[in-house]
Length: 88
Ligand code: SF4
Figure 1 (cartoon, rainbow, N blue to C red):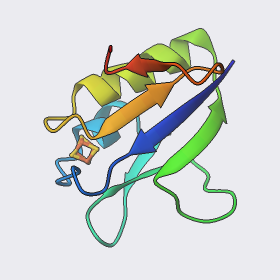
Figure 2: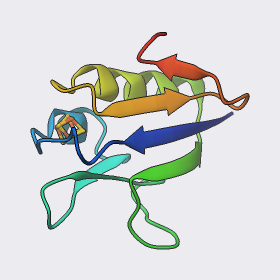
Figure 3: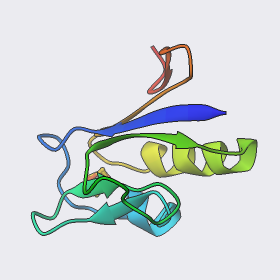
Figure 4: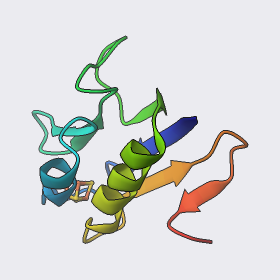
């Protein structure tokens, strides 16, 4: 399945708990904000938003990473564009 992962750089404080849990998906950039990766890669350059093809296990781990963010800077959407984290 495809999910869209977004980091709000205005909320991100560089706490890096998302990176610790899901280092294939999040990496701190020069501004100490989390960039979104696609399986460790950044095709098209660094971005705070990316559509990524994931397995169910990968999705669950990315959600765990998002849940660990102290400022809720990470949002995740399903293929239909519905927000699946944080729950609305
Ligand atoms: S856990 Fe949240 S605040 Fe910390 S780097 Fe990740 S997105 Fe930013």
